[in-house]
Image (tube, rainbow, N blue to C red):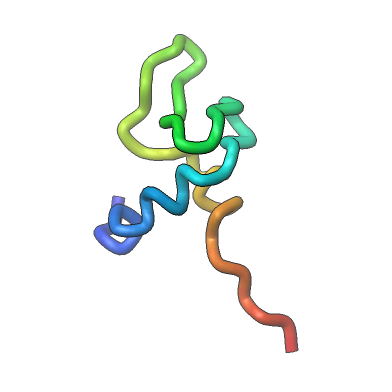
Length: 54
């Protein structure tokens, strides 16, 4: 994971994961229940800053 994403990890964990349904503040898990080192990409997309529309 890029360093820029590592710095923002607390904000990324502030939302529920749409893939594994990890609660806010909890880390993502695999289908077998293993805790993942990095959040799912869909969770990253959920918490990414929105670009302003012109």
